[in-house]
Image (cartoon, rainbow, N blue to C red):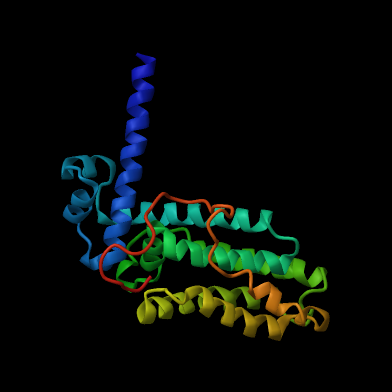
Length: 239
């Protein structure tokens, strides 16, 4: 009986994950207003009854997509920290991870689209952007201590600038080129930002740092996250 209970629980967890993935594809393609519970159930290959067993409403499952997106993004950030030799390298690996997520992870694309959609303000959320602003500011503080960033800069101000700047770059890359140039545009953004905030001795290292932001080649360490197929399902839209 205990084994049967564990099996049912495992099936429930797998079903919930599949529904979140299907919902992410629906929200990524259609946005919050255009998405429907019927569309989510159809994408998941499940009945609406199965969908409503796990999620009470479109708002409910949209909140689950945003929460899952934040989990994936935090794991990418952990990988970035682990592979970095300095604070500024950590920021570059974080940006590399952002671009990887936006091109590979449908849940991340959908979560960010929902988080910036004015029609989705009814979705309860715990203000994840506050976390990323503080995380960036903390890295900048460490970069100042390491002599990489000029101490005249306010770390929180940099955090407030970086988050919307990265979001804007990926949004324009999506609208204009279906994110085909996202890595290149992020390298340009960081070339400008690092040239402004870096200390004199670090400024010469900017080309090497921004070169970190490129797609991983086959055989390189894989990045964490969902097992979604690369690219977008359906018509491109904002994230």
